[in-house]
Image (tube, rainbow, N blue to C red; front, side, top):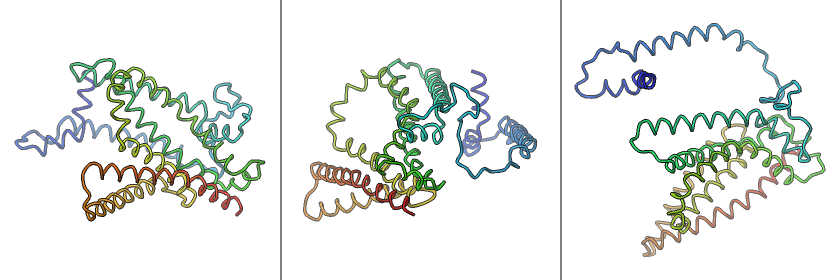
Length: 311
């Protein structure tokens, strides 16, 4: 396709690779330079035209309403509150509600279609099952990212806008409030889960061939437990710091993994033990340790939210 080739030729990374390669003798004022210069000038003019209109506006001190329509629109309006009012509030007023869900559904579909079309165009053979695997693994990454973002803001929003005190006055325990908020936030991941399931169903034959071997590996279960522990750690850190809970949790997980495995390896080698059996034992021990941490984080988060609500 001519459009794709022109986009590729206007890439800065491609031009840098050509310039840094040995034997480069082309002019530096080529197609990439002029297209990027024109694009930069166009965006600069657009920024000058629309800066005053969109930048010089009053910033509201109230929590945002996301894509919730102020008009009585049947599709985008939150309508009546559900029986689980906190779940309804978090789904619509924190995660955008049905309007954001429809937008994500359309964007994910378009992105996956473009990705599969590009792979099919650039490869000689691309079967339907391989397409399903592409969709599955892509959306698995998206689901992990979405849940990570949710875990960083599910309690942070209440703390930021100082509404936790009034929320705690409801005739519910803090644990019930927390789980209701989590349920409402997780509804926002349904579009990504939809495409994840579709991809898994299409490529299920390829995935089930080695499924038994994967489930028998202790490292697989350690990876799953680490991801769940990471989400809980992010949610816990969001109750202590205003910003940066997600990257801080990532750094703590990385450092903690290094310290644990290095320490256990030194202990194993010092005692004369080595081999895959010792390594599997270390993995199982670490998995049990993180599982206990997941259970304990529920109680710690509950105590932390109760403390913040009493201030």
